[in-house]
Structures are given as structure tokens and as C-alpha cells.
Length: 77
Image (tube, rainbow, N blue to C red; front, top):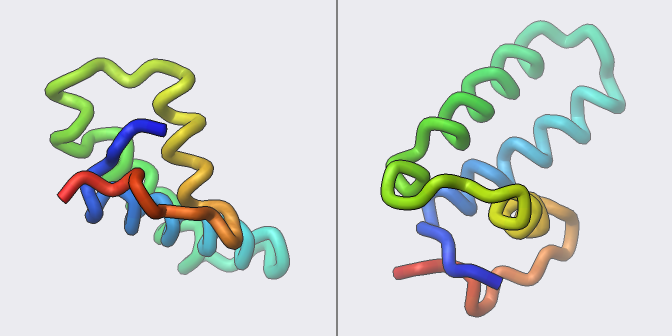
């Protein structure tokens, strides 16, 4: 797994949690807006300016947002 900045990993975890909440409560405007903001935060994060994101990098980042996702060794400090 590749190391990610802590704020990028945190945003992904928040995105995943918001997505799960929206799945349980469809139609919640505030959750859709939050998901949209977090998506933009993830996509335009400065980390991706240094290296172009590959599908594998996105997959690794999404793993951090899964319930029980192990973040040890994947956060760059």
C-alpha cells in the first residue's frame, strides 16, 4: 500500500461514512452536498498534483475508507 497524507485519508474516511449514511437515508440533501464537497476535496487534493492518480492509487485510498480499514503504514507523516 502506498502512503497517503493524513488529511487525504481522513477525507476519504469521511466520504465513505457519508456515502453509507446516504445509502441508509436516501434523499438527504445535506448528505448529498457533503458527499459532493468531499469528492472535490479528494479529487483536487495537492497530493495528486505531485503524481497522477492511477486506478490502483484510488483503490488503495478507498480501502482506507472502508469499515475496519487498517491505516497503519499507509499514512505519510
